[in-house]
Image 1 (cartoon, chains in turn yellow, orange):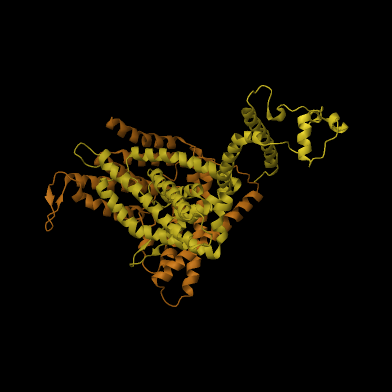
Image 2 (cartoon, chains in turn cyan, yellow):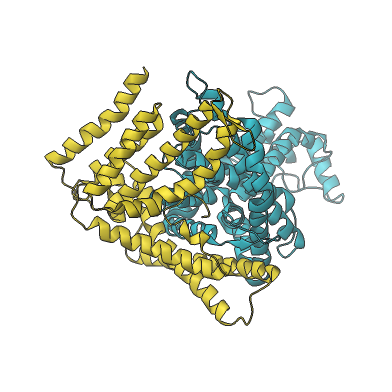
Length: 352
Length: 283
């Protein structure tokens, strides 16, 4: 799986770096925002964990053995962005210090295992374990399948990178200059090993790890859902609320259909108006209102005049549109106030 | 790491999976200590400014990837051998840690190319009558030649430069400070976690009366990985608290005091010229 130097052309290596770069930046930004000062020690230790996991040779049925990469379990526990960074760093150390995987092909290795592997693992786990309880058997199966799919997606991408080399980079006599096998050979050759042994190792280690964590450390399994990805969960929840708020704003003119008057929400002029007085009496159980507005109400009513009286701004002729405009204006003011408050509260919380 | 690696011998070591892991740890530690010891010797590469050395060796490595003539690859490989001899790195070490490992890994991948790559067939295998194409031979030679040359330069860099100097050189050359800090800390915690893992397996092995069945062995590996994961999480929390208590607020500062001399520029200039020469020849 670790592509050594010399297997991929310089153009392929450069392209892989170019594709991987935005993911690294995105992962870094996500991680920095979520973890702040925790990021460096957390990633360093989990990169080391990924490295050590790759050294665990798991005995497989049939007498052979294989090792996992760890993208499945790190994605499940810490989320895909943390997994991208942790596995990329582990791969870089492997390439530089231990010569496992090339330095020029580090971009391709990261793209295959750290980026595609982590994203596939996370997406498939989220899909398969959606709604399952932390202790449920479905989570173990979802983790196992996620690990299996992740390593096979990474292997398939590596096989495609290999298979494209002889098509694109050969000399005048047709000699392949880099990986020599076309897609028809590279894909089956890579996938045979990964669909069987390597995939099985990742499947067993990811599923086994989740089963173990369910028994011994369930808090680590809930970490990604409850802590690391709180903002992303919050974004999803907030999105639904935004839709709800927009629907309520559009439906706000329904208030015009309501008959009668809201009890207690009377103005000074209502006490002088015969129709309004009748409605006030109806709303108050046929008890007639006082002949004139109470003195206190009359005195204080002039203190503040609303910009949109009765949800009908003076410059708007349509009552329905006036309602919607008032809803927009009111909601906007509330959000602005909350934003200012959260900013003030956020500053007090530093440093994280 | 059952693939091409400077410590690839670890996974060819037979025995129980726990023994293999302990052996892998020993080899990683040995590699690290050897690299420290060799980097302190007096030699051509050890005497160069680490920044210049990093740039020069990377440039030669890229030259090997760019080369489209087997003669160029051979010359680059010869240069790697010469640099190793002038830097007190024995050819035996290069053979053991780089050449043999590459040969065993890339050789297995390259051999079918002799028969599978279509082209002119100068001769056939005696009994099987499989045709060996000229293009297949050349492509296998390219694959092996590039892999051997690159691995030689990568190993030379690691053996003649202390790891911290490699990191500082990377920082001086514009690699983000965060990545450099991550690499430094990860390198340290690899050994901490490897030691923890091998101690866990040793403890387990000392309490077993017979070799475990495949199923039990898998359960042990999964459970040990789980324990290691929780230990890793705990360790990261402790390291974080230790960092914060020492004033860490998210900004990383590294000290570097390298000095570039005339001989460094004399080494860098020809090293940078090689890939340019190859590109110019292509054009």
